[in-house]
Image 1 (cartoon, rainbow over the protein chains, first blue to last red):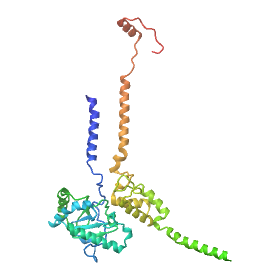
Image 2 (spheres, each protein chain N blue to C red):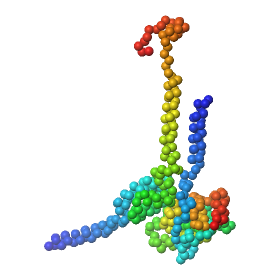
Image 3 (cartoon, each protein chain N blue to C red):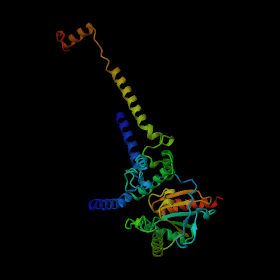
Image 4 (cartoon, rainbow over the protein chains, first blue to last red):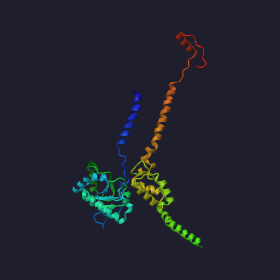
Length: 196
Length: 163
């Protein structure tokens, strides 16, 4: 009887390892940016073409940076939640419109001039927001994806929770689910709001 | 004379025709073979975040394109290979490295297999030792043999060569 216990034990260990490993999403790579200052950038604002935005403008506030694009299918799934959340006045949400034109496989962006690309970006992003609702305090335009690289974006949508000092405290990879909002983002945001 | 001028015209035409061709082949910085070779060696060691089983060098994902462009830019800025790797690790984590660094959180990954191997070898040796003591051949003295034969009621067998 005893000699069966060792293989049985080993088998159980294997089962536990596989159960943990197989239930994880390999696409969710933990971000090294959590706990680090949000990378600085200065980008044009979608609604006001002559203005630009930088993360320093949000100092003293707890806010969300949500990466989106009109070609992004999962963003569409996530969007109603953001719109409802913004209506409740939860947190200011800044949209990072990521590669609006270049990210769309159907368009050959190399053939467009910089001005044409900007115009097309504004038109497409604006149309998408008026169709699906605009939960954003403002949206900035990252047309070539450079800012996305600094933030370690590799799959849109992604959302960063940034504290009053401008430090990234949480990153949601993929669409925000109601569970993630209720159980992770909101409790953490409430706690961060009490920090000075 | 006519022939000479014809030759001159022909030469001008050929040169004229080949000049734009040469211009088209002028290599921009991105196609500098030295830079490309370095890009290849660096990006073969890096993982594409989108299709995770592909290297950054092999991936056709759009993000891989963007990242190759960044690496190219860093090479042209004179950054070392280690600096370029650090640049990507700072953004995407150790996961971008196909060869994870040796540090406390990866000790299990690096040394775990050797620990298991050592454990198995240790177990095997212990088992073989125990088995060896259990299998110690016991030789019978002549008297014991005779007693055994008497009990079995058979005459002592002549020793066999192949016994």
